[in-house]
Image (tube, rainbow, N blue to C red; front, side, top):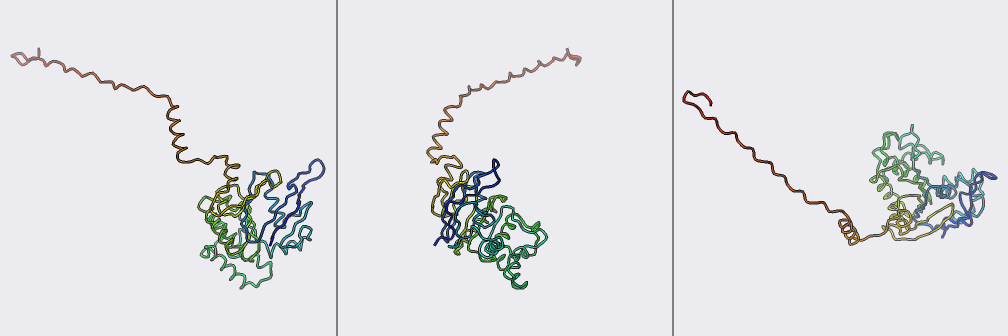
Length: 290
């Protein structure tokens, strides 16, 4: 059953000559349990698509159905309630409140839901344990590493047990080791039955996805299903522009390069002339030098 269904969805910003077309008649269906990566150059409409799907923005035209319910024209309070109960967000900049501990940040969505203090702190602690940073639950965001802060953001997104996780460049501010940790966590979340939708510029991260959607100028230009653990073909070719090569190709290239280099003339070793010793001075009978 489809969790997300977009039919001819468009999003316009501005008026008159200043109108910008951010989404251009997008059609997209995402089934429950999919792990979908969204790729494309800057300005292609990826973030706008995430905002519309996450009910942070309304489409200008078209039909949007979430879990078989029409949600494109929900009133603001209805959209806010649906976001709170069914969607978890993970942002590139973490968006943790700096004066609250990691535990309090994770418990915050439960406070908006009306859960009692003791119960929400216990649930938040269990969620931090699930993402591996329970020992840091009383640390402020400024005392956490980038990877730990993103783990706390993931715990906050999961604490309400949402049906959909939306991650907008979740590894954009992280090094390679922290990025791998975050993506492994999202992979574990996906294995428990959650639907995950994430934006990335890194073709390597498509290894975690079961499907890759490519955007350009506000439209979806390609939709590719793939096996877990493999880099998507279109991501490798169209974004990196690096052809697939074999070891034989590499060796042939090195051989051609060596032939192209000019050969240097052999350098003759210069021998230093032997130093001649001055003839010894003869002594006279009186012992004076002559």
